[in-house]
Length: 269
Image (cartoon, rainbow, N blue to C red):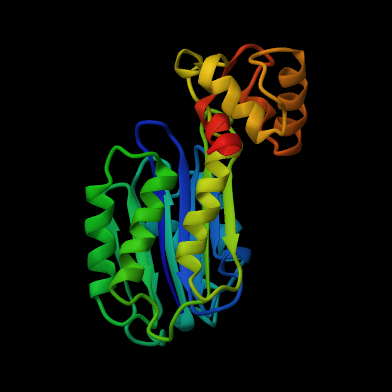
């Protein structure tokens, strides 16, 4: 009932997965990822335990095919399951049980696996594969969203749309991207919106690209914050401090007389 991708960024070591479906809360158990280990998508008549089990097997040194073989071998319900497993080195494998509803299948790409069931047809995976290649070089979270969007654009789940999710774990220790749309008429659009909001709060802009709080910039800020004209002063500093704290953007302004343009746009448009 789902189309998904498990992937790794070979340049950064980031790992992640993304999925969309006509079912409630796809992010609750389908997506699994661990830096230095790999990523897993478990779906169809999903056995959630496949996620941690396959990560354990990868961690123990099994390759993706062996992890799938071992995880499914003791499962009497495997004919109704679907799995995508990708190791941190970029090698992967997929499994589609014989009783998964049409259209169902999977593909192994360079650095990713894509898989789906109850799809409008194989064109969904074809579009996802093309999007994966065309988005090479983009951050993994953006690349995964492009792939999901491509699958959805050609029809995706044959029954319609309901939920979508994105999970990326960063090798450098940054906060993970863990976004879920549990029930929405346009889940992919909503996931894009949440991702944009996430980027505002958790992203960074190099300090050398910050703009001086002076002249027109200062007056725009003062107007937006309900202050009279007056340029850069302690009143504006205090108002900015209150606003950025309330909006969880205090990490994008250090209290000085220069400001991240993302904060400027968020306040003053």
